[in-house]
Amino acid sequence: MQPPVQTRAGMIAIVGRANVGKSTLINRILGEKVSIVSPVAQTTRRLIRGILNEPRGQLVFLDTPGVHVASYDLGHVMNRTARAAIEGVDVVLLVLDGSTTPRAEDEGWMRRLLFEATPVVALVNKCDQGPDQTAAYQQRWARVAKEKGAAKQADWLRASAATGEGIGALLTRLFALAPLGEQLFPADILSDYPRKLAVGDVVREKYFHELRAELPHTLAVEIENIEEGPEGWRAKGSILVEKPSQKPILLGAKGRLFKRVIGAAEKDLAEMYGVTVKLELWIRVEKNWQKNFWVLKRLGYVP
Image (cartoon, rainbow, N blue to C red):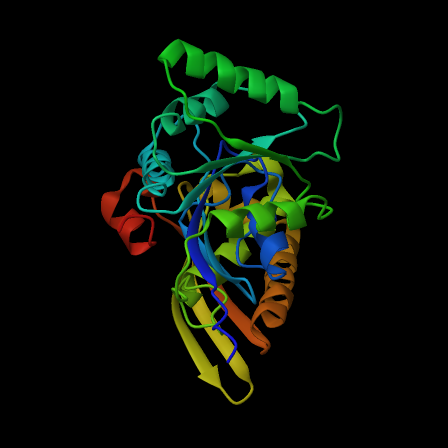
């Protein structure tokens, strides 16, 4: 008799400063869209689990918000979520932007991870863009380790989440570090992220692509109900802004921007879920929603 094949199962926390490509990386690894992506920093606001199943085993990825300088309640919640994600995982995947030199937020993560018992893989992403900055990040790690008297080492890899370069080597290393064991989730689950939150995130992503820096962080989408029928899904909810003056921005001239965003989101959602998705959304003013604990809780940003 052949001995049973031993597989591995591990939890991988993907951490790093804002806009280093964490969400693009997890979507590339899974081959499916489970986390929204935009050029605007701090697009990911919640912890999202993406699950990779293959013959080697199962890796559960936690896509975290990017740590940044926070000046409002939502920002502090995002930072706490990111920092808490490394507790109880099997590997921490620190993603660094290979197209730029190290920044203060990168060093902050290094200082935190130097004293964690959990193995660390430092991935220099965006290796397809500009000169290779891997040595600069390695030197910063060594300098901080010497300053703090820490002997911890990281595994250093380079990759491009945009092109797929280096992803195979990354997965090989992550599976090697994952402990032997049974699957943590059923094999047919890609993500345990709630559907209402995922639908709202896709709408928010489309607005981020349209508006860029014009209205990046005063926008939230609350999906209140999803009706499933023979012709598909109908999702109803609200788009929240903080000031009445922001409503016309979301609508655009003669409502064209709003219609374009809704159409793009419906197309994306149909591809994600394999059913027709119709959105019925209203733009609503919720003054200072980012500072309101109960609104943040209702939106799923606070546990």
